[in-house]
Image (tube, rainbow, N blue to C red):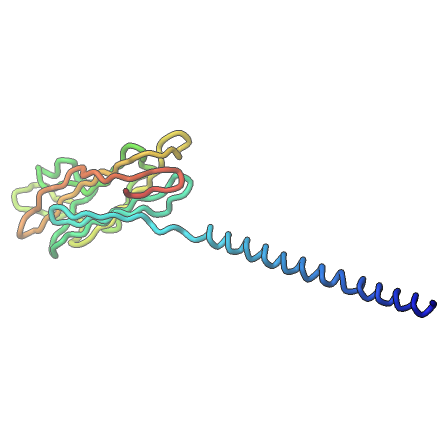
Length: 202
């Protein structure tokens, strides 16, 4: 009887000794899965969305519009104006709306509807002042080739985050010193969909 009692105690001790180790292994595995899941979710949230882009070509210029840095109902609208032929320039954003003595039209991007400007526009090109035949004053232009204008914008509405439609109004004129100018484009509308989480083109 004494031997039987001893064996029973030994088996009980053996089972008890292994039980916690199994529990620790299961707990560690669950912790690893949980950590992996959180890391995966964090990585997914950290990935920035691709910028919304649209383009059109009219009167000798291709205009590419893009939305960048949209967060908390604010971001930037960039417009790249690319003449379709070499040797053509665009006019400065500082040009009067009717040009200089009727010559030229300003390069411009304005917004309306569900968007408002959140600061002044900036341009990635220097301004040159050129003299044109028949024009007494120097005319401000950009060098020949593409020009990119960036306009900070924000959502307009309750809390700055309501859904709705907005418009970007695009204006420009391209000219060549020898061949003359193309017909100006004035307030060409481009529709956008705006919410606090996204600014996209239809």
